[in-house]
Length: 419
Image 1 (cartoon, one colour):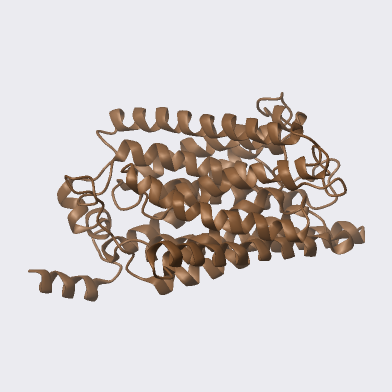
Image 2 (cartoon, helix red, strand yellow; image 1 turned 120 degrees about the vertical axis):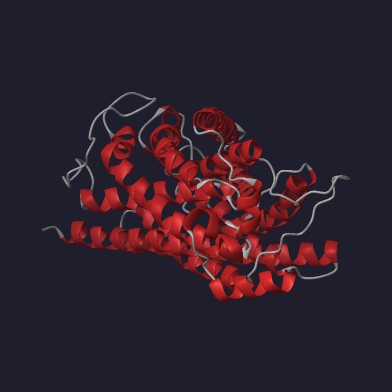
């Protein structure tokens, strides 16, 4: 076996493991950012829906993205059986697993818009529909040789494909499901439904941060020349800059260094650099992450003001930061690093690449939102609603959907106190 083939396969396999481990990060993030009466439900449904996504990706998702077809969809290679892929210098099975992990992450992001109020059945059905109808076309357009790839769309590891797609599906869900009981008062002011465990949330960010090295650096698909190290450095710097920026802006505006906002800043920096990590210089990664940290602060406040109830800030962290990250290559991509598309505005490329990036944001974002909204609307009609009853929501989804609490002793003690 060729040494390069073996090393590349080992490296991307490590990347796939790190990305799948990010599911654990999302469990802690969503659980820590919500109330304890829903903790067990959130943990269980995340594992279950990733499992559904994995099977669907094996059956049809991979073929729709990477199969032979046209500029819109692939139409071959369904029910992947482990074969190697022509022209790739790594194991086909490893590449398949790596891409499966990305599809699962995008679905997990989408489910942030369902949190604390959706029926378990809504998760299960939408997991199938998203994995067949929403995610594959966008991934094919950009990563599978589709029409956006033909235009030179730059999205190295998925600010658009993974994050914006998931966020726009989450937006459709939040609009259809409507806010959680008690979130907004009659005068329009919002009540703070604080997450029950900031330690979980902080640990989740660390897990996701480490997993992102698989996400971004693994997307080099090669161990050759150690370029993945450069990508990893850019990833780390953007996350750090996003953390610092969110802390500063929250301190200046709110008078306190808000911990959840600081953590969201780290994630926003990671999301933003995902598109550009291989195309920009290290100083630019700091700028990209810093701007993302500021944007996420104002984005969260904006969505709350217009009464979009987003419990884990998926729309801001993955949507707003995903848009900025996608556009950022249109400014900062260098002549030497822009192996896809053209250099950015600040490197002599004019407005061309920025226009391509903007087109990708609009088309992919609109597609993910509109298709998700239609699918969820049909589901709502067919399934007699997507949302649990008012009584079930007050009790908590742990008990109403599964018959047991994630924290049985703590929840019972709290109920006794409140009674």
